[in-house]
Amino acid sequence: MTGVYRPAEDSELLLKHARPRFRGSVLDMGTGSGFLTVEAASDPRVERVVAVDIDPDALDSARSRAGAAELIVDIEFVLGDLFERLEGERFDLIMFNPPYLPSEGDADEPSWSGGAAGNEVMLRFLEEAGEHLNPNGDVLMIYSSKSGFTLTEVNEKYYATILEELPLFFERLYCVLLRPL
Image (cartoon, rainbow, N blue to C red; front, side):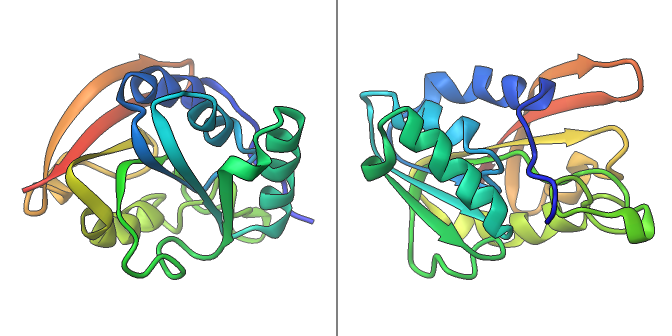
């Protein structure tokens, strides 16, 4: 069984900037424990929430969290790798707290390992995210100074604005707002 990602500083940072943008339809990509999913589903401005994760244990955890909040009927849970099961779906807000740390080999878990450099999952996500936004939709994403990711990698597809930088003891976390060009 893999470890399900538990809410931490990065989750709180993303929620801080997502909450004012909650409206219409929301996608929580890589839902993990369902922390952000439940927050979105609790907001009266939100009509639909879709929670996606590649890990069945994470979806079970998210369902349990939603059930405890009595929101399970308001959320669609999707087992899949990024957008593979969301063909034609569009959202007003896409939240993504990706696995962003570099691989450590055999110790890797999908909840935190973003590939060899740490940015591979993010780059795959960004290839398709813009196609899944409604007009005037937003993408909010977290990344780390350890992830090997820079905003120059998205300049051809998105307007990017760093909303906040959070210095931690061993890294810096960034919350970025992305809008398709």
